[in-house]
Image (cartoon, rainbow, N blue to C red; front, side, top):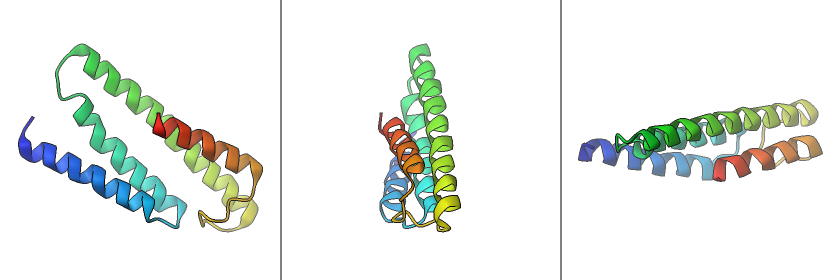
Length: 107
């Protein structure tokens, strides 16, 4: 892999993590997590072995499902509380869905 490309992906990982940690809004947290997902997939599949490609595809599918679940949890929370703020997570269904999504994102 080109060293400049590898540096770009690693910087994107750091940027996505910083955006996610510093966000107060659901959409900015989701955007940071998506930047991380899109930056790590080329790093997973950099060796052109079929298992690396298979692992990257599986990782992408799990992360896409977790992102969908995260957005759904934020929509349920916004519907019930009227706010998109991360600190206003009061509804039990959205709390459970968010916990599941974060667990999928971290695995």
